[in-house]
Image 1 (spheres, one colour):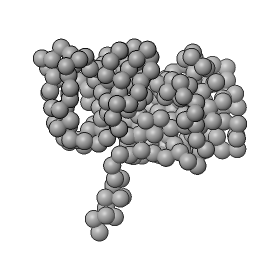
Image 2 (cartoon, helix red, strand yellow):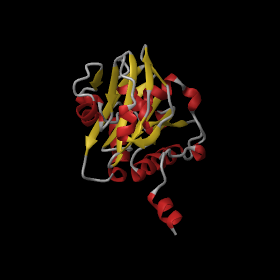
Image 3 (tube, helix red, strand yellow):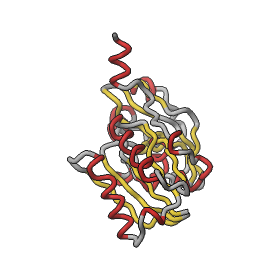
Image 4 (tube, one colour):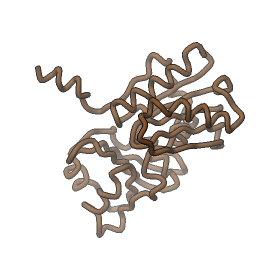
Length: 228
């Protein structure tokens, strides 16, 4: 199944094209431009480099969150725009934390993805990695950083990944050899991992109107409204 992955949930913009178990192309870019300015041109360039067009695709997948409120909406809007008028296309949104785990799915054991939310607060989860597949052990959550990591079971090896993983290793596990930080290339979002998650479970496809962001916490507008 020829699949386009789009990730705009964090610090980088990323696109990937995968065909069944084969990664055809991937691009990851730090940029000062907004994701809305670059993500579709990036996808078009990637497809062109593969000798493909949007009409060749069979599925499109993006990050569901958690992550940047604006970035997540951009990714969801891009997917909905691509599939509009193309009813043959499947589409899906995959947990950002699950996808981060797939960056390091060669690791056998528990993987803890962790992303910065605000000072002292992180998005985190716990997953089990076996034979290249990851399954959640807990629900993704927004949580107090210190409380979460001081309670983490490290009696067996744990892999940390995500944009906060190096700081977490240094702060809480500097002398703990059972806790590892992911290699630099695998700490941030990769669209190829979204493709891998979907291709491993095409049943997660949804109608485009059913795609929603998973913020895990109230948006700024919701907080402001609730405070009135």
